[in-house]
Length: 469
Image (cartoon, rainbow, N blue to C red; front, side):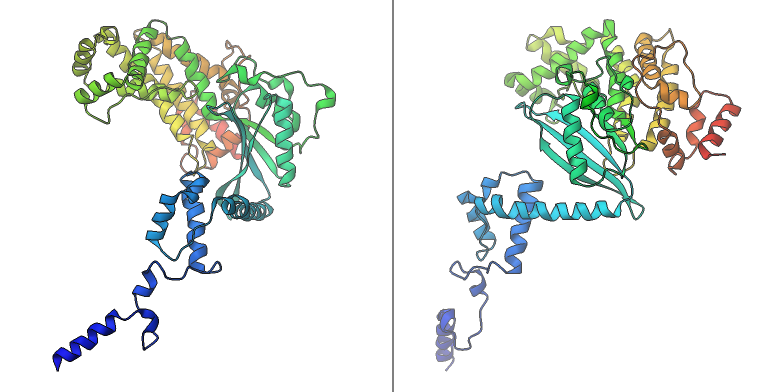
């Protein structure tokens, strides 16, 4: 009897699901390859498609063509046989435009709720010499700071101030924020400053012409006549220089004047290039030093990449590095005891600048309140490093001179005068926003007055002036 029952059971489980007597779906019916596909209106189908586009193509920056790759589609079939991924044409012509429209609607709704906004504007060129302009908008929403990407567009042609002004004007008009803009933050390139002078109430005389740019060939600008001036925005707006870029100009001034230490910097740079250009030396280096200790290459437009490179070299086991350099016939790159001492001194002087750069590059926090405390702390730091007994006192003195010169207007707003300094390369840091932001930030309040070089009476007078008393 048990044998007959078992045979009946075997027949029941071997019978295809399509002829099941009970008409109830089994687990196999959900995972077999010949199961029906999700309907286009299915929530599961829409969820997977949205996740595919949003997470893989947008945030992981995978090419759109991946959706047509047979191996990728095979993976999706293994993941969920009932899911039917879209083809490239559908993604390009339908899904992405719909997602773009959805985001633009959200941004428009966000901007409608904002009474005041600030913008950051930047133009850059990629390795293929394609230029782009990016504009972000920043505002407070229910007391919390929020940022949105307002525009990201190709920028063809020459980068003159007039053309940048026209592009920015179009973006402002498109999003209907003409009367809401209070501040616009850019780098110190002359063309960007001229562009802002065309659409904001900024004097043309404030344009920096001392070559304070990363690549001067990109910033050639023509003369702008009276007929070229665009309709101006409201008069209560300010053009604020990017602090991180301005700080980079100070460090660049110091590195340019290093003098005797240039040979040391050249050795460090050549060692880094050797690691990134010679596969044979790279292999030998990793066998000797281990993986994860490769010296990073530097970037001319990012001074802190040079700092990170020098710090990495200083932290290496010099005996092993020197033995490797001798073995590979690169004795000219060996650092002497004097070189190592100079390297440590340079790192010690630049460390606060590196910390300040990292602190003011945050994208999830307010950074304008850091500017005044950082400037006063750097001023105090460089004063202590300018001793004539120091091996690199001239380096510290050059940095200090550049800091006082470029941020002269900010020092003046704090009642600190340096009458012997030239004003031709001063940057536009005269806005009261810097002092007000530092005082209003609970992380700083008026604690930064401790680094103010003035008397107690002068510090108290400054505190009362900022407080409106």
